[in-house]
Length: 99
Image (cartoon, rainbow, N blue to C red; front, side, top):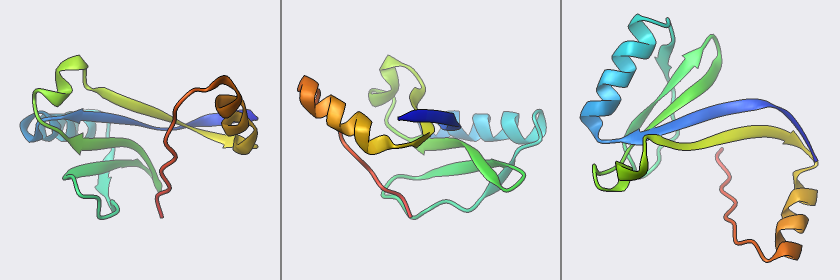
């Protein structure tokens, strides 16, 4: 597998925190709020041009107690080889596909 780029970052937290994040990223950095798939949680996708690079996801304050950075997603080539490696090492993982 070869990582080709960082696809997006996901910040999770209570809705009031996300609203402050939206204000900062749009007013200070010039990102725009755009389309987001209909997940069960509330949130925002912030775009740089046509690319959604910051995802904001609502979680409870307790769930966010370990920090706001929920995940970083990488765009890759040959991802199946990494999944095979995880399986071989007995590492648990979840694959989520988003339309």
